Image 1 (cartoon, rainbow, N blue to C red):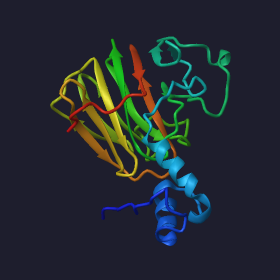
Image 2 (cartoon, helix red, strand yellow; image 1 turned 135 degrees about the vertical axis):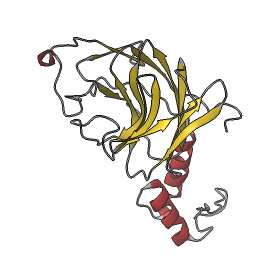
Image 3 (cartoon, rainbow, N blue to C red; image 1 turned 90 degrees about the horizontal axis):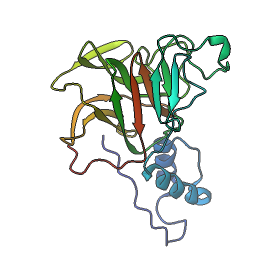
Image 4 (cartoon, rainbow, N blue to C red; image 1 turned 45 degrees about the vertical axis):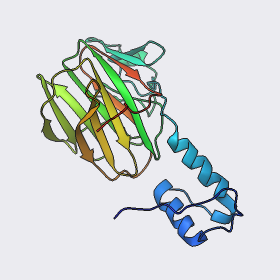
Length: 232
């Protein structure tokens, strides 16, 4: 069923519209408790926040000891030997067993787009995960993450440890990720063709963040971008 947002005129008094309907929409769609008459400003702030282009850096606190960040924490490189885990600051956010790193941007709604440049890597995963995902798991192996992976010259979509082949795509140097939180869609984008290659459907229940797995080579992230013109 398509959800139609009520029309709210900010120049009219706060009593404009059906407060019960508006409260329900805000609470369900944006996952906040609110009283419309008191929190109409919050509603508009949330709407504005979700409309902004997502900007993020890689979060060093989450990075596995085999991963090094570079270029002001927008890139990640895999080190085959990695760091001695005893030399890495231990915290609950860090991945302990898998070469995974999260982005520091939290997504609670809206439609967002970012790109990733792939350098000399033959095995990696790109997508999103719940911020609260277990650090004992790898992205794609549970119901808290949704990724597009590349290994043995083949692409796949993956969640709950189930892989679906993604065809008609080679190994581009740069790919896009498009997330529509409310629609429950994450898509892999062919940048030169401005075309969605493959999409996964999900029901997101909680804050998400960009997620990356890397087992050789480098990844460089590009955020704060608008969607490519004519994306289809």
